[in-house]
Image (tube, rainbow, N blue to C red; front, side, top):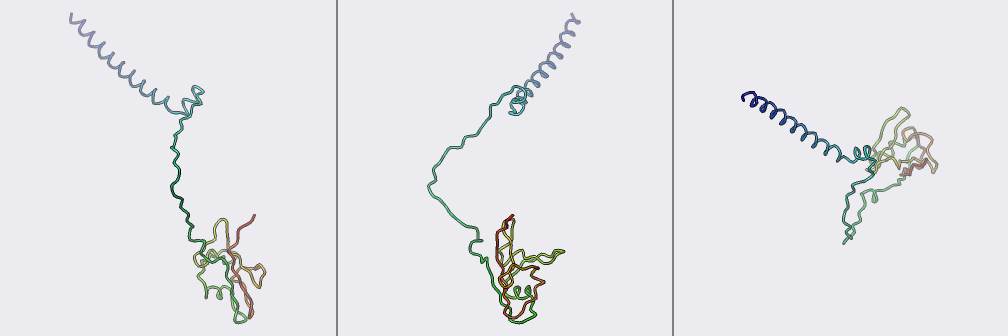
Length: 154
């Protein structure tokens, strides 16, 4: 009789382990198969879960513009003396954001309006597009320097 009790205890332990393992694998399998990409790859299931958002008609419409619209985009400066440097003339009248490169000084912003991936600050001397950077331009009396915020074209 003691042998039968001992065998029953061992079998009960093994059955409990088997049931626990089976239950664990069942839960992992369900969680695994709930993943859309796994389900699609295993069963060619093209079902997509989409979230529907209720359509609501707007009761008011707001319009606003980011501060750029009221910033000046063109500036003109006239040299009062011969030998005047264009950069010094411009810096005496507006706030410039400059960046130094190997090829010279580049204007990145004027009075807070910054160049970006769509626009840049172009320099004109006497109505012609400047052939050098603003720091290299030496002006004659009454020469005109213009800064224009222009669109980059490719």
